[in-house]
Length: 157
Image (tube, rainbow, N blue to C red; front, side):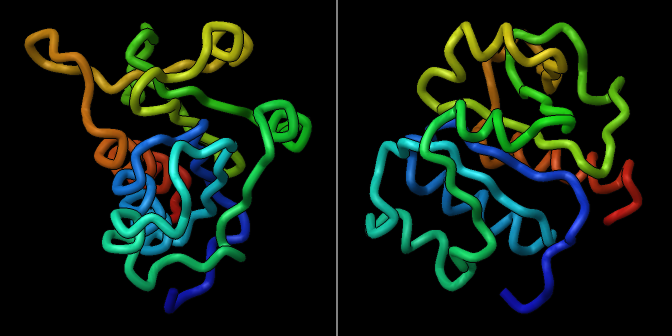
């Protein structure tokens, strides 16, 4: 990366990502916007995967990504911090929500979201409204939309 990360600002977390190209695209988005990325393992691929490397290019620096062995480790690290779950099952639009600088915005697996017990555990659940009852956007596109909005609201973009 060619710039310093924002020390305080919204963070993006990926719960057990399973598509290497999407994770790589999200790493690039976070790098370009100066946002910390957190990955809750296990990943459904290796970081040496050629599909991952092709998309991430030279944007990945492991020091700018925090890895958690599991969701419990992630949750323990977030004491007194607000976690926001992006989910198609939410009733509140991200457009009607006030983001804070220290929020962590979590996105579920591309193939399955987050398990029901985690879904129930997170109080703040938001969605991106869709036209014509479409199911969902690509996760990389969703991250870009939500990250841009949260940075705009917190005056960091």
